[in-house]
Amino acid sequence: MKVRRVRPHDAASVVTLMQKLDGESEFLLYEPGERSVCVEEQQEILTSFTEQSHKVMFVVENENALSGFLSATGSTIKRKKHVANFTMGLLKSAGGRGLGKTLLSHLEVWAEQNAVTRLELSVMCDNERAVGLYQSQGYQIEGTKVNSVKLKDRYVDGYLMAKILPEIPT
Ligand SMILES: CC(C)(COP(=O)(O)OP(=O)(O)OC[C@H]1O[C@@H](n2cnc3c(N)ncnc32)[C@H](O)[C@@H]1OP(=O)(O)O)[C@@H](O)C(=O)NCCC(=O)NCCS
Image (cartoon, helix red, strand yellow):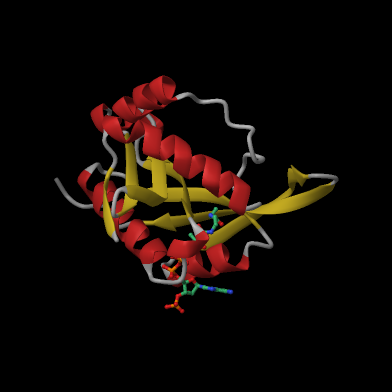
């Protein structure tokens, strides 16, 4: 399996990946079948991720299919340019092989190259695997968002987590 930057022509594979992930994991935001992005719209989104320096998306490629992603979005506002917010997901078949760590290390390289010094994310508090992964990579829990997500008929709290990176002198 190989981690690489996404390309606009991955659109159909990304749509398929997101549909599979939404069906497999309750830890992502969308319910199964809720995402309504078609391939053309996805292609436009991916184009923005390849052309705009405050955005990045990595995918895990396995033969001709994708089995995971990490996407990060920063800001064009001067006072927020150093911050990027990200989300990630791996299919169960790709989990437990260090790919989560690999995606996070690609994100850090991108952050260093783009003067991003704060990486942040939201994660459901009961997502022990993800919280463990982020903590193992130096992310801190900064706070709890009460009733952050409603899963069917129950509310779930979420952690705000972040990692502060050293500023690289230019
Ligand atoms: C969470 C997720 C990204 C982890 O990816 P992964 O490739 O399995 O993770 P890795 O193998 O790189 O890293 C595993 C690390 O997580 C931690 N970890 C794994 N299982 C854990 C558990 N049950 N409890 C606590 N920490 C755990 C460990 O630090 C482990 O490192 P180690 O194997 O060296 O001990 C993946 O399971 C996933 O995408 N899940 C579904 C969607 C999701 O939850 N996305 C995150 C939304 S914020």
